[in-house]
Image (cartoon, rainbow, N blue to C red; front, side, top):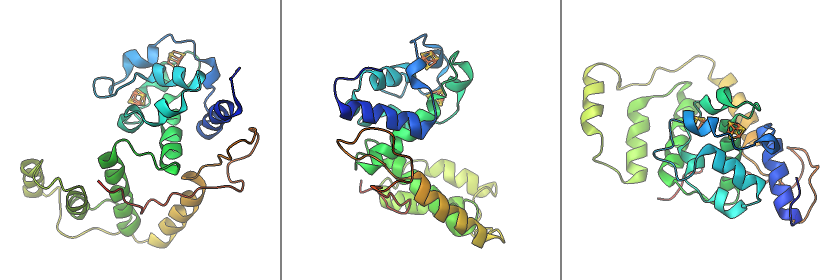
Length: 212
Ligand code: SF4
Ligand code: SF4
């Protein structure tokens, strides 16, 4: 695609490489948007995200809420006639935004990190401790208490975590994916062509909590 400067071209190519999606093929049929379950909460439709990428609108796309609100349901990918899974694009954009310190939806990022830390510790989510940590860190102490109490009464929120046996193997998976997944290969002013994993990485650690 033709871009007016190298930064926009690099950005587009990085999104394409990270997501593995042929975003240059999008012709705005909007089939993704018409099936998207998140449009009523998001600031842009999925097809608009792709269009912004094609126009090199880096700041706009990294500062939007849509990339955080996307639930990765992959309906868009199933509907796209050009095989573009927008969920993968959203994931790539989230990683790139985090690497630049841009976190539009701080509570969503916090929830994501607390969830992952719970899985890392126990091998599966322990809902009780996860929600307690999330609420303390977010300051959102009072919401959903009634739902939490109902879940507790029905045995859906046990007091003690159930840990898996192979936590060592799980740790290895986390270590591997932490170094490969949450990073940026952006090197300002350098033409595309670098591979994920090259030098110039900006590491993001899942244990990094956002400051609400
Ligand atoms: S369904 Fe595919 S081609 Fe159509 S607007 Fe969405 S991403 Fe573009
Ligand atoms: S994966 Fe995200 S963008 Fe795609 S349909 Fe689901 S919520 Fe919408």
